Length: 208
Image 1 (cartoon, rainbow, N blue to C red):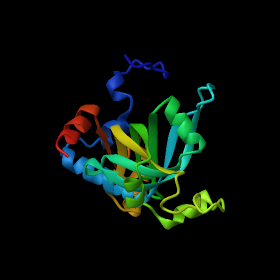
Image 2: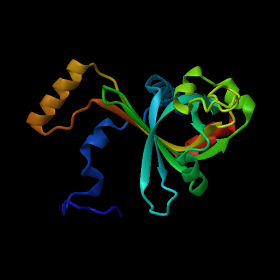
Image 3: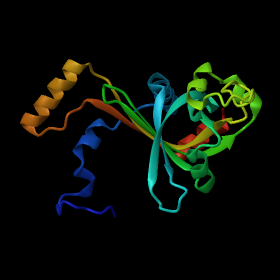
Image 4: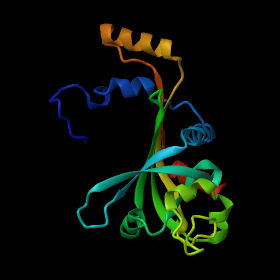
């Protein structure tokens, strides 16, 4: 049974009416995957949370640019400098969370397991010249931020579960819903809250 902090005697299933109002379960798995995949691509940048490798147990988040997606949109690729702190974190604990959000308040949270890939063909396939700005040129003719720079690797995040929220109304309609909810106490119906379970991810992965 979930911990209750409000000391309410109300049925625990009804104490979060916002989620109950906005949870979208009448949608196919294919549509859920397509929508979250498109949303992540449109955001481009996400915050990757890892557990610090220095034994402190602290969680650390870093902004990462989405380089590509695999497995029908559920697995995520990010370029990285293999000599950076995040690779130390992932070697210690590969469990990560990737969070995306846009200016409309839509968001996605992906829990996954990461691996560090140094395959040169994969690196070059998704290479962007903008990476030079982040790696710099060490002046030795090798570590120059180019596609053959051995420091460049790929972090592959395999999705385990995902939760996300997308809007289905324009900003005026959402504002009206919120205003009405503030006056009446009725939960605002402004988002589509969706969940992709581990079983659904495994089902999708088996056919892609």
